[in-house]
Structures are given as C-alpha cells and as structure tokens.
Amino acid sequence: MSAIVTRFAPSPTGYLHLGHAYSGLFAYEAARKVGGRFILRIEDIDPIRCKPEFTEAILNDLCWLGLDWQEPVRKQSEHLADYAIALIKLRELGVLYPCFCTRSEIAEEAARAGHAPHGLEGTIYPGTCRALSHEQQKENLEQDKAANWRLDIAKSLRITGPLHWHDRAQGEVIARPEDFGDVVLARKDVPTSYHLSVTVDDHLQGVTLVTRGEDLSRATDIHRLLQSLLGYETPDYHHHPLMLDGTGRRFAKRDHSLTLRHLRESGETPEKMRLRLTI
Ligand code: GLU
Image (cartoon, rainbow, N blue to C red; front, side):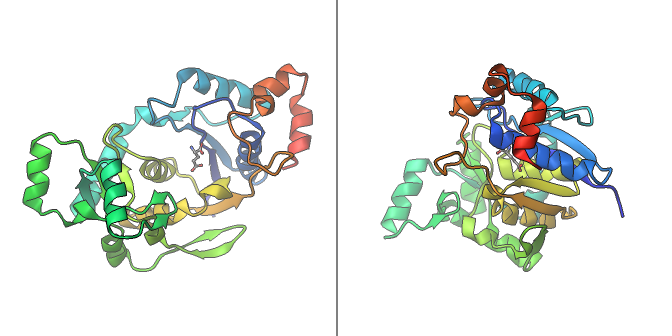
C-alpha cells in the first residue's frame, strides 16, 4: 500500500483560531501516526479576501504549534496555469459553459420561475445560459462580456454515471452533486474556484487522505465528479466534527480571543494547546 499523504489547506483570510489548530493537527497526526507525509497548502485564490500577512501568520502559528511539513508550501495563486489545463479538459468534454448572468439576473430568474430552489451554496442556478447556442456564446465572448464558467452537472453525470466516495467516519457516501446546481468553476474575476483548485491540487500533490471539517463534506460530491471527469484517482476522506465555542457556535475568524496568536500571547503553550485539542 502506498504511503498516506495528508494536507492542511487554510485560506489566508484571517488569523488561525482553535478550530484551525484542531483541523491542522488532525491532518498532521493522521499522517504522522502511520509514517506518512503531511503537506501544507495555502488556498489564496481570492485576491480581495486573502492577504500575504495572514499567510506569514499561518506558517508562524503552525510552527509554534509544533507542526512541520514537506516543503515547498503550495500557494494556489502561483498555480493558475494548472487550473487552466483542467478547465481546457472539461471544455473539451463539453461539460463547461460560459454564464453571463449577473447575481441580480439569477435572483430575478429564480423568482420568475415562482420558486428559488435553495442548493448547498445558495440559490440553485436556474440554467439560463446553459441554453445559449454556440453562436450566442461566441458572440458574447467576442464582445468581451465577462463570463463565469459553470459545470453542467446533468451532462457530467451522464458521462460519469453514479458516483460515490469513502469517508472514514461516514463509510460509503453516494455523491449527489446535482444538489448544488451548475456550480461556477472559473469566476469572472478569478480564473478558478475553490472546487476546481482543491480537486486539481489534491491530485497533483498526491494526497491520499483528505481530512477537513464536516462543513465541507458535501463539497466532496462535486470534487468526486471532477475527479471522475478529469481521470483522477479518488482519495480517501475523513471529515471531522467542527469545534464549537462555549455557546455551541462554530469558531469564526472574527473571534479574536480564540486565535492562536492571542492564546499564545496570553501564555498558552503549544503542549497545553495540543492536550486541549486531544487529537
Ligand atoms: N481552504 C478551505 C478553508 O480554509 C479548506 C479547503 C479544504 O480543506 O478542502 O476552509
């Protein structure tokens, strides 16, 4: 059996908090205890929300916590060409289409249809641009109209057939990517997306066990579909429960008092913190 490769993939949109520490340690320990490899990836494709100073702080905080990882750290913003290659492949399969709708047009269209079906990421895209002819698509693109590139889920599933994936906590899971509607894989402003980058990177980095919070469990349905379309192997998954604060709420980056930075400044030691998180 090949060695286990796990990863921690934070987005540098703020300081790491206790929830991240748990998730990072979870991935780290899953590799360490079986002599595997642990990778750190910085998911910084959003140029507005991601800041280099948070990347620095993440590396610093994780070192303080006692994690070490295989260099180099992959920063997604430096690998847009890899996502472009995957997009070309999907276009060749005929499962991508340009969408010229604005947010308000999507909301209006959904309301006109008399219902606004809610998917796992908000309103399900009503499919307006899926119906555009090649000529209309070409005309819009030639006029430099900004497009989001969406994945035609129904067409994709016709190619792949039914899919499932394995989770160490949930067992065998049937993928239902249709619950998301036609997700955006490349945005008007950023030529990729969370779903695409994460799938491409886990493949290129040889990740064999994806660990992350259970809030991202359903996103795996989309990733599984992309893996199948792109001819990638499917890793094993382990979605772990999220840490909750004293009031039962999820930790958020806005809770300054729970950031590793703050806890460390208030005298917390990495040893105490690791015990507290009991991985
Ligand atoms: N970058 C994502 C986040 O910070 C995690 C992605 C993943 O683990 O798949 O929430």
